[in-house]
Image 1 (spheres, one colour):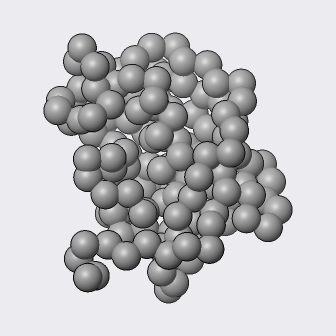
Image 2: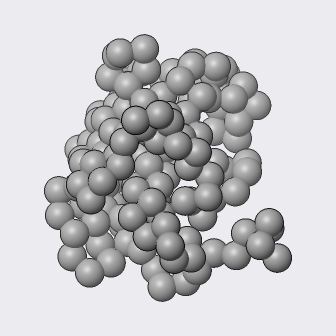
Length: 144
């Protein structure tokens, strides 16, 4: 699959955007790409911070939910918990992250996933996250 622009499938807006596109997406799996800008809010000392890595996983989850519900307004999600997160290194600005999320379970508005972030074929981080989707829709600047 060719990369698909992720921006219309997530509620986040600049400067918080942490996904550029996705390569594959279905009910159980998504893989996103993100080129780390040097001036990004989560870049410190030329490296993406732990908060940036966590937000990248969360936005990969949001992209999946947005793609599955692409005929509906984009919903807001919140991180419920982060478990077993292991960070091997902090990638440099200018590098491209490839983040894969696999659904472990979904119950009502809660989704539990396992995630892995890679950069240049090396595992940056992996762990589990619980995400909740709210009933609130997002109104983007372009829609006002």
